[in-house]
Image (cartoon, rainbow, N blue to C red):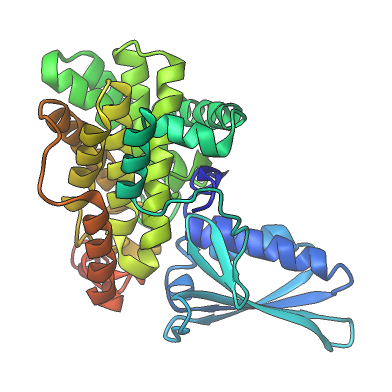
Length: 400
């Protein structure tokens, strides 16, 4: 498996698949063709179907300007390699083609072409959580120590930077008010939720704050602000929501939070390696489902859970999101995405609590749920995989 740095990327919303990755592709291709006078970008499948709402063209233009850029949208053409396909061509002043590159956005801001995954350096010898748990038992260590042993001590400075961005995003989202960009005209809710939560007591206060922190990040993402993929932009609110709550309201140290981030990154890595974190490939179960599992594992780790309890928390967080479709209204990462992040944060908290009250024993292992998610994703119709033509996206017109 790759470094968990490939799970946690700092970038701008609203979509790691539709903005971060296409922007990266444009940057790479432009640097290879500095003498090009204009570019032609063809977007295929899901990348084209919801590209406008996800600001795909804006992300690409930002990297290619001031050169002339022509866009061709082919939402009905799904390439065999992946449903998020794009082709970039470079031309000279006489309209002669200089170079072309067919590349795919495979989730979490990652890119793949005919040579394979870009930045595909593997540093982990194990690919299954069961294998990692066996290593932990043999070494007498836990998951964050496994990460440190294979990533090196420098991983902590990277995770510290990630945590600072996450905290900053939550704080901005709590302060910001108004309407999110786009034709839906969706009102931000994090700020008012936070105020109401602080005036509440008991369980209502705890859950209200947790919801507010997750909403804050998801609303910032929807506004195109700086976020951390966790594992994607569309699911970026779940993990920071839980961690910010634990850090602020449970008085947990920064060191424990970073260890939770390491464990969460490992969980996301396993899903990414053995299945997918791309909504266009497997639906939202691969995005929010993975984020929920990551957050549940992080919380169980932070609160002193055993490796068995942590695995159980992650398994529950993932299992109870199986079959979750990706049906963004009008192609924007707003409905149902923003609320879905808040609910998943609450679910992650509950899964971690449930696991910590148990001895960690259960029947279905995390690795089996990952395999099941991949199979379920293959069975989900294209209309429910980020194309914006099925589910809530289809029925939206009745209520608009």
